[in-house]
Length: 178
Image 1 (cartoon, rainbow, N blue to C red):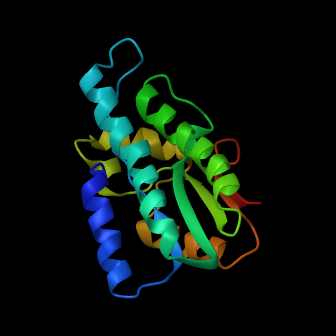
Image 2 (cartoon, helix red, strand yellow):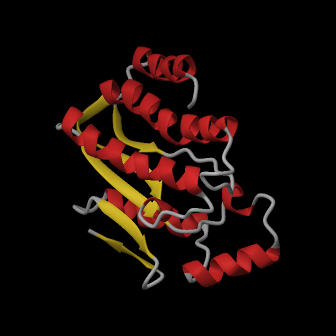
């Protein structure tokens, strides 16, 4: 998603094939544990290029293929709402995704935008190079680590509802929709 030309080519092929999109899920994420003082330009660019620019590329080339009243589901993170100084660049990138959603609603008013600010999900991104101690700590903070299948069900339910947001709440250690 970081390459404008590759994302453009993928959507161009879909357009040539006559594809119309009902639901577009915009989800990309990489992170490195770093704060604002220890982050390097390389880490900053790598995270922002994937976690923010990648979303923009998908919107720029995917929206022309959307059916009227189509749904775009933007996957964000609970850390976008509860910024973590130890994961500063990741948190900021996902916070910026929420701003991109606000601008997108004004840019494409005929489309429905929905956002999921997820907690811990046991994906490769979450589990990569993590000790069992780290995973136990995350389970305490989040009240558990969701399985991808459980999150998928919540996302399908969000898409099929009138709600526009799915949010992980650190206080209750659970999800709510609004």
